[in-house]
Length: 548
Image 1 (tube, rainbow, N blue to C red):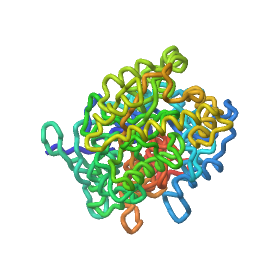
Image 2: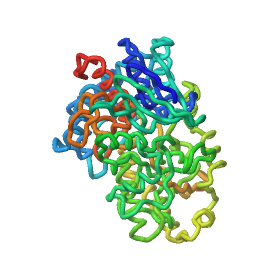
Image 3: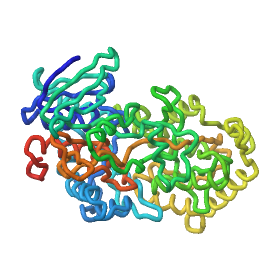
Image 4: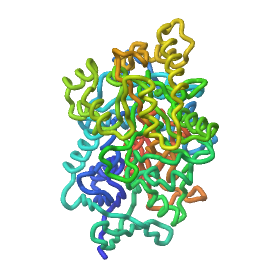
């Protein structure tokens, strides 16, 4: 057995682990990071992400004429997540995050060379439950890959051979609990099978969430989403987000809460080159596309449209499926013109122009559409069919649908009714989706990526496209319960000496800082913020503003 010692052990080499390590190294602490993945994947799920970050009252917002404040943002956060003071630490974490996200996250990453696109995205505006009342989604220029790579380079730059050790392929299985205090961990090398044990004065759990584990997802399926989970759930989380460290924390008396609160997406397709079980790609659904159930009928009576309430979209897909006793997946019906203008896939690998920081490539995609992405996705995806007519499209959809028949006549009628409303224009239409498209187009960032009232069945805009979309797991909104200093709490609400948690492992702080909904862009920032809080407490004994 390998036995080693460090001042601080960090379990997980994602963005939370990297940030905590930086802060600790700068304070003169020796740090060991134990990461379960390979060296080339340092940065975890954050490195694969689109790179959006939620901030409040930034110079970028002010330059764009957006008058934001922590008070407005906290109202939106609590409304959308349905958080109240009765939620205790989750509510307190939310207030602290909103108040401090710009000085403690935005300014901090800017000093480390991170830049943002000049126009903020405006997402999760809310359906019945009000969400973001202002644009706050700041897009990292370079995606999550640039963010994690820059932070990892900074960590390595300030480290010495003696102060930082990173062990890869290290599966931590248990925490060492000695005389009421966590003093280290034990695990196994994934490649060699060699057992190891590490000792430390403090241990930070930054091992990610639960949404890579299909059994955990199904066992904790939220009742708002129906009596049972879908037959097929794609994975958009990290393959090692399996809850192993949550179990290890509970084994020593730690508290894990809100397992049923997950941030899944409604529009996943199977990855054409999977790197993990159930590997999916999370689409940014086209606003002008029609959202149909598994039989090809439009979901209503209020139609679905992305960008307002992701959780509600999943709820409606599942609700309609249970009412009709059909599978819990859906179809997006559109045409090539809409797809060129509006189609996107979340993540660094599918946004090459932004990832590679190509201004020309980004401008080209905005003006002419990302034909490279559209063509490659249509060609490679098992979930997409194209056709020159609605009846031909329905036939090809039936070929993918197994025992669930496509209602060809009903689908044609739904498309025709939508197109008729589209031709009336935004001032005369009674269609809620078209009204919301008009609302979206009032904001410049959405206007760039949303068609100008484009009908579906139009020959010049063809061919027609149908995309079969599955619910795809992404982030855990629950996790290890922590106090405001990122100290892990036991089931009686008392801090466990020597043990801290940060990032998604901690529900991004407090075991559930978001409540039941997230305002988007709050995940990367939540990792950075909670990791800095944990490091400040280890260094100074507190994470109060002056200590960070």
